[in-house]
Every structure is written in C-alpha cells, then in structure tokens.
Length: 620
Image (cartoon, rainbow, N blue to C red; front, side, top):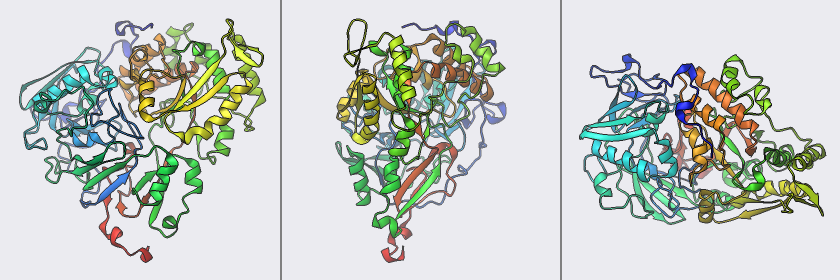
C-alpha cells in the first residue's frame, strides 16, 4: 500500500514543530513542571489541592456495579477470558486499568492536560524530544515494594515491543525509555514526533519489572497481575463478572489528582451477551448503574415499579465531547468494495430517517463526520487557511473536497426512497455491476454479496430494512451474529465485509489518528483501520494535524482532513446523540457539575450514599 514518508510531508508553518513544550512559568527551579499538555497550557497551578469538579469530602465505601459501556485494545463488551488487556491475544477484562498506576493523570475539565501521579513532575528539553520524569518515592506496588523509574522504563519498553498493535503504533515515535536511577525516568522521542505522544506515554500503565521477569508479558492469562493503582482484582468468574476492590491504604490517595476520586470499596462489571437480557438484569437490581444506548428501551421500558416509586433515578447529562465515528465500516480489502461508487451506493440504500423514526424514536441525529459534535468537523466551503492545505492535492482528491463537505443525502423517510435507490443503481452500473436475472453481477459474472458481521443481536432491527433495500439493488446481503470471541478474532484479522464500530475521538486528536486512518494501520492486524483506508493524502493530512503548533492550526488541519475523508465514502455513517441517558438505583451521589471532558464520570467521581441506601422504601 502506498504511503508518503514523513520526511516528504508538507508541514504547517514550514517545519514540523514539536508541540507540548511547557511554558517556563510552569516549571520549578530545577526545570520540572507538575503537569503538561499538548500546547503547554495548564489550568491548575503547581500548588493546587484538588480538581475543581470533585467532591473532596466524598465518602468512601459501598458498591458500584454496571455493565461495560466503553472498551479499548482487546476488551469486549460481552465477555472476558484474560486479565491482560494490553496485548492482542484474548479478551481482556474491562476495568483492569484501574489496578495500575500511570505517570500522570488527566484533568477532566481541560482538553488534554495531565498532572503528576506516579511522577511528581516532568522536565522537557528545549527541543521537546527528551522528557525526564521525577518519580515519587512513596509510590508502591500492592505487595509493598517501591515503584521505581526502572519499572516505568521496563513498562514502556515492553509495551512498545510486545503490546497490542494499537499501543505499538502509537509508540512509534518513542525511541527509548531509560532509568539512570530509581527516581528518574528518561524518555527519548523521535524528531518530528507526534504532539500527543508524551501524553499517551504518561497515561500508560506501569508494570512491576520483577513480576514480569517470572511471567511472560505477551501471554493471555487469568493470573491476577501485580498492580499499584487504587484498585486490585477481587472476585471474578470468566465471562460473567469481575470485581475490583479498593486498596484501603493506597499510596496515592492524598495526591491532588486523586482527592475525591476512587470512592467505591468495590467496582463490579457484569457481562451479558444480549442487551435486552442486560436490561432485565438492571430492573432486578443485579447491577446498579446503566447508561442506555438503545433509544427504544429509554423511551418505552423505564416504567417499571422502581422508577415509578423513585428507587431508580433517570438523568440526561450533556455530552460536549466529540461523539466520534459510529457507522458501518466497509472493508475495502475485499474486491467488491474498492470502487468509491460502490461504497456510495451502499450509503444510498440506508434510510436513516425511517430508521430513526420507526426504530429509534427520533432520538438521534445523523453522523456525518468522524469529528461529529465538535468544532473539528468541517462545515461550509473551505476557507483560505484550509485551501492552503488542500491545494497541493488538487487532482489527487475528488473535486468536491474544494466545496461543501459531503453529507449523506436526506431520505423521504418511506424506508425505500426510490430516488436514492435509482441513484445507487446508477452508481453500481457505472462501477461495472450490472443486473442479470435480478441479481447484481460483475463483468466476470460474480454475484455481489455482502455480509454484515455483529457480536450481539440488538442491532438486528436496524439491519432488516437496510438489507431489504440492498436486495432491491440486486445485492445478496445477509447478517451474521457471532459470539464475542469469534467476532474479536475476525475483526482483528479483517475477516468481514461490513461491521459496526464506534470510534471516539479525542478533543485534541493526534497520534491516534494514525491507528484509525493511516496506510500503515491498514496493514496491521488488530488495528482500528477497519475499512483499510490507505490514502497518501490522508496520511499527509494526519501529519499536518500532528504537527499543528496551536489549537487554531489543529482545527484547520482537522477540517481539511475531514473533507478528504468524507469524500472517500469509506463508511456508512449512522447516528449520535449529544447527551448521556443514564439510570441508577438511588444509592449514589455525583458532583453537581460533571467536567466536560470526563463523560459521566463513572465510577471514578461518583460515591456511595449510605443515607440514601438506608432510606425506607416508602419514603422514596
């Protein structure tokens, strides 16, 4: 696959400036700062006592239980069979990251700022390529052994060498991690490194070097790992549930970044293979907190007795973060999907308006961009700054890139918009797929077939009308629901035609874009580049995003990227909502105003309210 070398990329401002060098005012006399961010801006001073949004007096205790609502690397929503969530093998347990300490912790009310956790400070060289982290002497593993810079250096090295492919790719600009002594970690980055790589490094788990001299890191295992975080693994049954117990004497509890957080004695995740069954589990109080992702359920099924009498509370909390890219991703590694006209035809066959009204109670808006619900999304015609980035690629990208960005057409809501189905048929005909005996065939007589791959059945109603429309076009489409383990294997091997995924984008995107959309990621097993996007122009624009010297430049570069990506028709966008519908048994408290960049803040910022829990049922 074609890929532009980084040295050939046209860079914003004429040079690939390294972002993230801290302002001098943020550093102490030794040149160490208590925090860092992508562009050097920090809200909190070095003597801050807590984050503004936490309840520093939140009580400790109680149980928080839920079902998984987010995942990363090798994790699954439906099951787990491994306590190693940082490699490709196995299905890692949701929540295992809570058992490990990181160098720094993110602030929930800033786009990307981080403040010291296992490291008390960081010193950055003038060229931004060497980061010296000063380790806290009080940091300890759960067995009481001191956590040192040698553990941190080992962790970064083993993740870069043996970690999940997504981790390895995001660490491509890390040259080495060394520990000249127990108190000092030195991380060296490559010239022209991605702006956010140091932030990513500071967010990675720190493992015990001694522990992994006896255990192979790259193996899937159910042996409880030795951690140093606020929680440790408690009871679990593979594929059913896992509990994490709060470390009562955790070394980091009094740090400013941890005050008011990690309040529950036990955090428990329940696993279900079916969303409807999971909902019934919630009504029966098998778990206590639920974020609702099915509009039909939110609109029609929250009328059970515990809601009516106030034992279960419902809230709709705002979501001001980028909603990301949710949709059907079309695997261009398959021959029938290589032509963009074919992919556009597939998009024409999906009637969002009918689906939203008939199945989802008009609860959603149409997704059009991977930067949906943010100012990074392109709108209108490109301005002068965007055109400066796009003009060098004129002739290499569709002409529409220089006008209004592509938006999926609005249907008539009938379920079978004849105008758009005719357009789809015309596009397929142009691409060489003709009708023979009512079926769409290639010039060589090969039938056009398409299989949607899923790992749970809740999306079946959304596929039925879509498959019917594809049948009208002569395409033999089908739906296959497989178990989570098989799904993970097929997804990692890119063994599918079309599958659903939602990728959440950071408020300050950077290196992670390579894992989603770069030519390199298209060839890496287990990567997030599901469609197999391998466009040298997008590669070049990713590098421009990474090289942005300010938030304004970042926004302009993202707009340019968005226009080119949307012109490629790599996916059929689905839907999003700019709020979080949540329900919970009334035994919790949470901050009155949750921070913008921390979602709903569960479980870290919530707490168990013993007074509510002990209130008589009739008083609710």
